[in-house]
Length: 221
Image 1 (cartoon, rainbow, N blue to C red):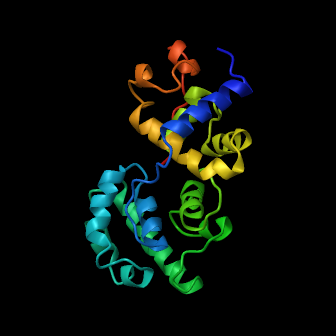
Image 2: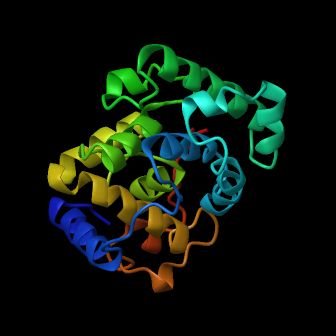
């Protein structure tokens, strides 16, 4: 199936209608809480992250408060999250930098966000989009898979997929489109056994009629 500009636009229009108004499933009340939640979300579901932050945020919801914890204490608080040791170390490192260089506030630029331990481009884009109203496309596992499978944007790395999506999606829609693709990946275009018969873009998607077509394995962590 040939993927034309018109076909890509038709897919995006249907995804926009289907997932209109959808946003993150993470629960948070501040920029710092969102930062913590997104760092925890790597290789962990939003449901699990919300359980963890539900016991973490009532007492440790700012950089200075979280720094009151020893590394072992934070590890215990987030132990049911994948990669909890590395995440605990990164969280305390990020808190230290926020206090020492940013007066305890989460910075609002890509350059400064990427200086924080545990923050990659995906996390930075989530922060810019949600908290600072900067149009951004955060490429997580779901976005990476859906973009490659549908051929909306093909790439071997999250950066390549991000650049591809930015070229075909109007800047004003970048932040919303991030959620269209995430929710489509969660609900329908699953990694295993995608629900093609229930897919709103099934008749337009090359993967639905070419079962042998492979999607690159996600390199995300």
